[in-house]
Image (cartoon, rainbow, N blue to C red):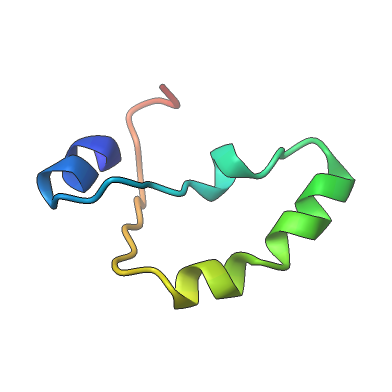
Length: 56
C-alpha cells in the first residue's frame, strides 16, 4: 500500500526504517537510528501504517 501511495503521489524515493535499518545488527541499528530525526525532519511527507494484514 505504501509503495502504491508513494507512486501515486509522484514521489521517486521511499525510506522504510524497518527495511533500511538492519534490525538484527546492533551496530547498524545504533548508527542508522541516530539519523532518523534528520531523515524525518527533511521528509516531504511521512506515511505511517498502524496495522497490516501480514508482513508481506
